[in-house]
Length: 294
Image (cartoon, one colour):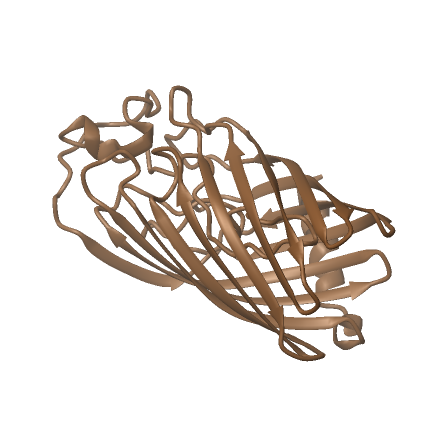
C-alpha cells in the first residue's frame, strides 16, 4: 500500500498537466532553535521549494527542501515539512516542526540532560557512548515531501479537506539531517467561517519509519486555531500538539501566530512565528514564504 501511494502521488505530481492553470510555486525560509530539554541548543535553517497544482477538488504538492542543522548532533529534524500551524485552508503555517520527539536515540550521552526530550527512553539496542560537547554544522538536501488533498466540502460557512503525505528519506542519515526512513501521514482539516472570522481544526496520524536500533511509536497530531480575513490579508493563531513517538518522552506542543498578504493576482507573502510549550518542541522559531500563482 505504501509503494502504491508513493507511485500515485509521483505520477500525478509530475504529469504533463502540472503546468496547466492552477499551478503555483513558492520559496521560503524557516529558522528554529531549542534545547529540547538538554543543556545545548540545536539551530535549524529550513529552506523549502514547493510546487502545487490545483485541479477541481484536488490539490497536489511537492516540497524539496535544503536544510542546515547546528548543534551537538543528538537531534534529528522531524516532521513532514510543516509544523502544522494553520493547517486548514485558511492558515499559512511554514515551520519545520519537531513533532515526534526526533532525537536520535541511537546516540547515547555522558549526561542524562544531553539526551534532550527522549532522555532515558532509547531502545534496548542502543549503546551508550560519550557525547562530545562540540557543536557541529551539517547541511544539504532535506527530506522531500509529496502530498495530495481532496476538498470534501466548500461553501460559505464550511471548508473540509482530507489528504495524505509521504516523506521520502532523501536527507542524509549520516549527517543527521533525517532519519533515513520513509514516513506516511493522513489528516483532515475543517474551517468554519463566521463572516470574516474563522476557526479551524485539524487531526492527523503519522506512521514513522524506524532506523536500525530505534523503536518509534506512530504519532497522532492535531491543530486548533482561528483568525480573521481582511480584504487582502489573513491573520491567525494556532495551537499544535502531537503524541510522543517514544514511550516516556515529552509530548510536542507549540503555539503559532501567522499572517498572509495577497500582494496582487500573482504574489502572496506569508509569515509565521512560533514557540514551543514542551521539551519536545523548539523554543522559538519563525519563517517567511513568497508564493507565485501562474
